[in-house]
Amino acid sequence: MFVIGIKTLLSTDEKDESIASNRYYPCLTGEKWGVINGKGEFVIEPTFDEMITVPDSKNDIFICMQEVNYETGSYRVKVLNSKKKEILTDYDIVEAIENTDESYNMWYEEGVLRVKKPEGYGLVSLLGKELLKPEYQSITALPGTKNSFILEKEDKVGLCDNKGKIIVPVEYKEIKSIENDYKKGYIVKNTDGNYGVIDFNAKVILEPKYEDIQRVSGNKTYVVKQDGKWKLVNEKQEVLLEDKFEQVATIEEDKLIIVKDNQYGVLGISGEEIIAPQYEALKIAFGDYYIAKKNGKYGVISATGEEKIAFEYANISYQTETDFIIADKANGTEQDLFDNKFQKKLTGIVSNIEPEKGYFRLYHNQNYDYYNFKFEKKAPNEVLTTNEIFLSKKDGKYGYVGKDGNVVVDYIYEDATELNQYGYASIKQNGKWGAIDQSGTLIVPPTYELQDNKVIDFIGKWHLSGDLNSYYYTDQ
Image (cartoon, rainbow, N blue to C red; front, side, top):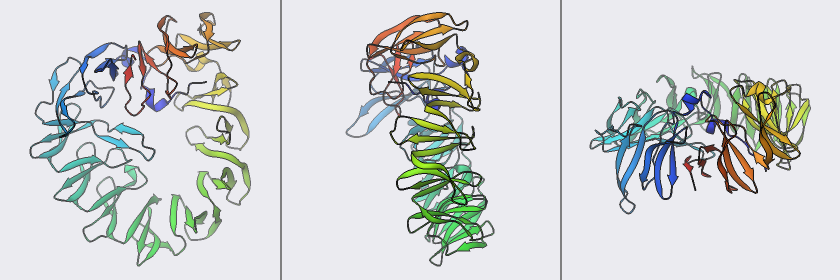
């Protein structure tokens, strides 16, 4: 068994202890909920029957539900800070705003809370500043798109950002994002049933006069349906291409990945065929190279159809920030790593990639190793510069060594992790997990099985729950 870290879930901006200790997380002990900080200390004592919402781990705002009636859906909200002072008391309801992506990963929108008064819903900042007057029937996150909120009023919808700026006036029947990225703009549907495009600066790009618009854009071009035909138009609403495709999957510079008869191919923006529709899936890797799917397996081809990586993988992805390719083997247990010349460099499982720090970690042959983006192996102390102890393996067992290489924790564990940003490492013995601190002292004896946890992580005596969407720590 091995542990794969999830960078976006557990990372902080810095690994400085003073910063990490000022993070906040819900905690569950017995049947009561509270809040702990990055040292594992109680900030809010566990006295609440319902899980406490922490909208942003960097800010001491804790939304506590009380007097919940599951039959009527009624409840009372108390919002506390780290001094246990009640805040935002002018509102009937204060809520974090949930959002989910296409894989059902959930997050809270940053920097903003939804509030309610008798006259309606509005938005406030985490400091309590009113961003949007409470006057709307509802305010919800645009699914899969950050920093975008659908406003509903008198059965019409509009859109604002997390500063309360109105991007789309409340006069449309429907709003959806382009490519789940607010910077790409929004597709709007007016009361006549026609579609247009508005960018995130509130500028109308395409007047609402089209029968439909696909959720794809690139190089200031859009795929629209007009007079029953799909067309590629620019911001001036000039037709660049028509009657050449059924669907456009992506637009990259002057190339379109199109779908025709359920097969993927590539067209130039002038309509010339670059790759005939013949693949089950297709996406640009970089330059003139494409990740393609054929007979249920993935490979990489050039624009001329030359096979650069054989069609033998369960999935392939190109890492833009690091300029290498990760190909998942069909057996589902390992990955091959290729450089941008399509040379296979390493095999294993990439457990985390740190573009800003210039390294990634690889698990192979029951070992964890670190590499830079030139695939050069690095010692742990070369990349984990703030750690005091480092994971080490000997004779099939894990222990920890100091910066001088001397053994700090004996090689007695069957699995283990590096120190996390809070100064704790997880250790496994006899099938159960516990924790040590940055000095190597045993903090939690191996008592937790945690076989269903995708991520093993401790803050003092508290371990991360198995439900990553709920994201809380518990001692049970």
